[in-house]
Amino acid sequence: MADAADTGAAAAPSFPVPTLPAPPVGVVGLGQLGGSLAAALAAAGRPVAGWDVDPAARDAAAARGVVITRELSGVVVLAVPLPAMATALDDLTVAPDATVTDLGSVKRPVFDVLGRTLGGRFVGGHPMCGTERSGYAAVDPGLFTGARWALCLEPDTDLTRWLRVAEVALAVGAEVVPVTTAEHDDAVAAISSVPHLLAAALATAAGRAGPLALSLAAGSFRDGTRVIRSDPAFVTAMVEGNAGPTADALARVQQQLARPWPELVADGHAVATRPQTRRTVRVPLDRIALLALGRAGGAVTRRLAAFVEGWVPEAA
Amino acid sequence: MADAADTGAAAAPSFPVPTLPAPPVGVVGLGQLGGSLAAALAAAGRPVAGWDVDPAARDAAAARGVVITRELSGVVVLAVPLPAMATALDDLTVAPDATVTDLGSVKRPVFDVLGRTLGGRFVGGHPMCGTERSGYAAVDPGLFTGARWALCLEPDTDLTRWLRVAEVALAVGAEVVPVTTAEHDDAVAAISSVPHLLAAALATAAGRAGPLALSLAAGSFRDGTRVIRSDPAFVTAMVEGNAGPTADALARVQQQLARPWPELVADGHAVATRPQTRRTVRVPLDRIALLALGRAGGAVTRRLAAFVEGWVPEAA
Image (cartoon, rainbow over all chains, first blue to last red; front, side, top):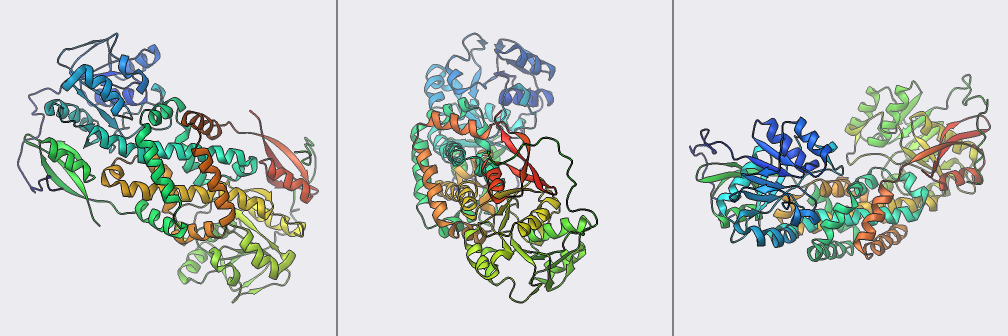
């Protein structure tokens, strides 16, 4: 955390300054994630437009105050499944100076497609929330409250545009974690892709063990398999779109499984129950400093004029 | 399900007949499981006695209507950690005709110790509930409602005593799954021991991946690691006390992990989301018929005079 300045109290004005309106937000895809984001922004009184190929999803969003239109500007958020990212903007009109971000669970393939066409106008993002439910019926304006929202800072990312997207995430209650695309994909392999694969393997193995085992299945099994109730197409796109890091992370879990069980159980318990305390920090508006905050396990919670405010975990 | 008679309506009297009082229950160990069982029975107006080496656990149980005593009779329930099973009755006075059962998460080691000394008076049991919390502060009289309660039927198990223990489980809202000791331990390896080991491996691997990964950890990771928040001594006793079946079940999960991911994800999703419907059945009071009910994924929900009533899962 050498780059995160711990300045203590400071009297910087909060941003955006009240006289500058927040940029409009346009959401493409109004399912669980996109619909929840649009609904949360609309509920906060912010101008939010949106589009979905499904008329029912459009109607549901309109009922929550989202302006349904194919013309989007400001911060344009792609909230579509990974395989649809490349073509999500095809039938829409996007303002030439709009900043484009996405909510996809893997960042490298999205960056390869959209970073190439949009250049510095694209900022990859991934809010770490959502449930095993999906679609507009699962919309919840409180979905992002307290969630981490990874936001990619590549060497050529325009910091002003990054801050604009970060401000949208902060506005719906998320905490922004600055990451590189590669760091994001490695982390997500370990904490999301592999848990989904383990859950699938647990379920199929128990299924083969027969009806007795499944009928005895209680809390530990339900907890361990819950995530594989998610849409299989979503899970497959996530693991296949991040195959290398996922294979590496799975191999590391299998190495752990080869350890003596009492040792493994004690260490796993220690990680899972580690107390989490936080220390408030202020970080300059600088890519290196922001990435250092993310690597330390911290997050941005507030944008101020010349820096951001956030926190880092502290040893208990 | 050849042995489970599906008799449809029948006009048998319910058991126990009101003029016969339910046998008293004595609970040894008044932590989360034992304390919850004693509290649930006391709340139902049944005579329940109990003992715990910890005075605070005794006081908490007494406040819920449990008679604190070292003299136990009727159905005596050992609700102590696995390593303490062999000596749990050492300082207590147990009526010579008492039926002894236990709530341990592995059945072979308990049967080897208590079956040897108590013979047909011992009936091994395992309610599939409990949370990652433990101790008398985690007591919940509703803990067993709707839970499966495995109850071992070995070739020399006294069926009358088995039914007496089953009746205690039914009285607190559980559904009784008749199993052999070996079947129980195989099933528990697949649905409980392995999930605990996977959770531990997931947590330790993510812990080694560093603060960024842990700070991004969201729902799938929390679900996948929740069970390893349990007391490590409990988890270690469970996996080490059932080492053979656990190693076999873990190997089967690892075989699943070697399958192509899209296939694995689709199959895992199918198992985890399989609709569960039930068909009511009546089963004669016969070891073979009862075990067939358990193997079919069914459970006993009611004791009637000449048979038990229960259910089996039905293909959707």
